[in-house]
Image 1: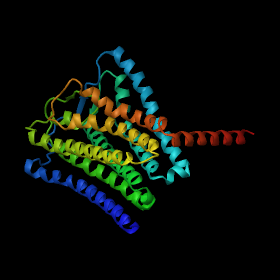
Image 2: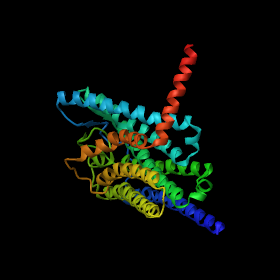
Image 3: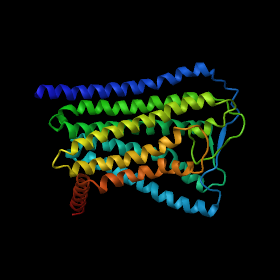
Image 4: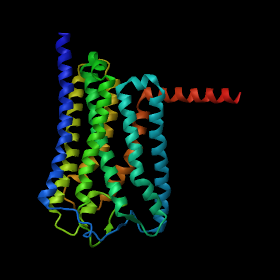
Length: 352
């Protein structure tokens, strides 16, 4: 019976890795579509050397208020996510736990993701002309999708981790061993890179010769593609079927995984801690995936709430993640207190 359970768990393991591999390979099909679109790179066809960012507001008073507000939020993002990474790395017990190992990588991604658009936005609040060079715009597109897709894959991995921990607790540590954790995280980063590079390879070959105003505070695919001097219908279809479908599929897989977990928890006695953990994960998943599905799973048309959704995805969510995981997690709070006492004792020893 035990051997059968082990085979079942390993079967789930290899099935998950196989699905992740297929999802990564799915992105390669979009680079081949470039030949169908006939988008050959022409250095002389692009006359736009920079883009003008319209930002969140044109009022100087409101921009000053937004600068102070987002500066405070950015400080919270950096300190909060950096704290989680440091606490997990400093606590041997948390570091050995697969859940906290993945959580430290999630905080690292949020920390990097906040650095893609927020510093530029803060600087633009204090400037009259908000411009970004074409190369800088491509860099924002690349890192935004690289980190965003990596985070989506990582959240899917975290859902799988919770599934194994709750549905197969006796084999949890055997399945989620150090080697598998490293491979899963590496797969998440590779999947994010492949997804992102396909976006950039298509955008970089579009001709830009007309308007150069982006109605946002950072560069993203929907706004940039609309400025191309060509019929972008097929390009939009490719982008939507890549980013939009990726967001929706990962979101549905996560919802299905947590539905199975909740069904399993109905028969468990000590389920309050597991429910609390799943509630935290579901909150983070909703905060990340709902804005992404709204932005990318539709034609590239403009809605009045687009900027609000963009702010939520690039600024608010990276700030809320550490708050959700630390305020609702007893292990994290204990580890933080332990690290604080250790630092105080070390400071007193040095001072004495």
